[in-house]
Length: 267
Image 1 (cartoon, rainbow, N blue to C red):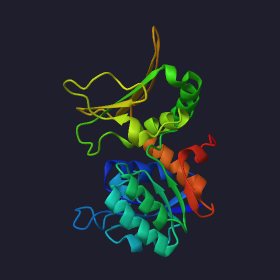
Image 2 (image 1 turned 135 degrees about the vertical axis):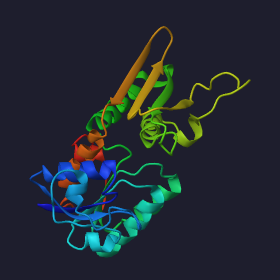
Image 3 (image 1 turned 90 degrees about the vertical axis):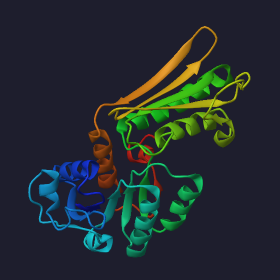
């Protein structure tokens, strides 16, 4: 039984993680964290999540929440995650990180901080998305340079980062498979007389609106034909279920940074 603490315990994602964790025979919720001043502080995390009393009070002290935990499930923001990672590293606790929007230097900083603890870090915890990651690599390698690549992602109007971490990872996977430098070939903006399309570029387009949970399409466009690989998220539960699966898998693992490909046995 792996004991977990959950950040954002009073939010939608935190609540679903707590609820799904109570349904697992491999996990036990022993800590719940929220920001200082949150109106739900002190309340039972299970009752707030709607899954029944757990005897775990929501606190604004990460150290207190981690006291009896083996690992932390963190869906926050890069700056918060980095601070939480420092606490976990200091206390020797593992992490499952679903936060998105990390810049390259922040990702490297995270690697440095967590070098001594086991971590699952993924831009998308969805099982289906991670299957798409594997398929994308195979498609890109097979098609080679004869197809133009464009990536379009859609999310709700509250999402703060763009493009999504999932879209960026898709671009990185395709670029790597084609022997390209993603940071050089990614094109986030076209306007006016921008000239002909560079055959090596990977176009990245972002759509924001309404309550779209998440949708990603990668287009491989050739002469007279195209392939479209699309993943549509219909519920945030898929992210929570992936995090639960990652937490159950991570328990007892040696220090290191793993991704969902490792969790699912796809790497």
